[in-house]
Length: 259
Ligand SMILES: Cc1cc2nc3c(=O)[nH]c(=O)nc-3n(C[C@H](O)[C@H](O)[C@H](O)COP(=O)(O)OP(=O)(O)OC[C@H]3O[C@@H](n4cnc5c(N)ncnc54)[C@H](O)[C@@H]3O)c2cc1C
Image (cartoon, rainbow, N blue to C red; front, side, top):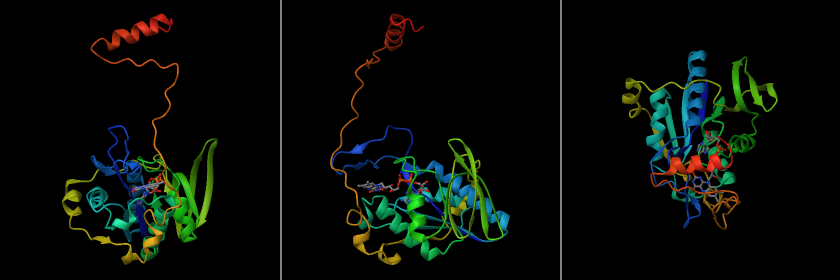
């Protein structure tokens, strides 16, 4: 069974998210790592391969060339191969352009199952998988809490606001797993050591047959026209901590009889 797992490099979770006022895009200049939600997708792919007894798990990413470093975490967990699509002309891709590039890359792979995480922790769209599935003309099941693959079909338990849906779809299919689906393994020392030696293809847009006007800002249908901080709430009182922060917070709560 061939399994492709789409993964994204994101800014580290620690610092608050920042926007770059010059480019009007997310500031991705600090420390970066693999999107935490994608670890569940990689784990799901590895378990599928183990259950099938053979096959391949390939990681697919569109991002800057340094994203290969983040992808090595997935190789260290046990994925067999990495494919990074990186190209100056892809910078600034919105959902439409990103889904087009990934779909072209996935067509080359011809996987039985394309796995995604539930969302990317930087832009939280939780929508890319449906756009990619539409382009690949494949069924998609999202927010998967449990799933099984047998006899050329997938049967999945999909989390909803009111309970669970049980959905069955034929393969090939696109599956977006939730973070409830499994507990991702940590890469072993042996895995980390072998990650660098595993095949890592770095491809340009031309390599995967993407016309330059279908990616980056040229291929995007959305533009960001302006940035502004969220409006402050009128009833908010900002307390600067000059050493007496805790005392001021207590006073504030006591005045309102909240403690
Ligand atoms: C005008 C504009 C400019 C933008 N410029 C950039 C930019 O320069 N660089 C940038 O990174 N983003 C850029 N974005 C954001 C980009 O459109 C989104 O990252 C992309 O549409 C995916 O959406 P998301 O991050 O919300 O992912 P979600 O839909 O939340 O992601 C779901 C899952 O999709 C997979 N996934 C997400 N992104 C990728 C990827 N790139 N490769 C492989 N798998 C992926 C992961 O498995 C993830 O768990 C821009 C957006 C706009 C509107």
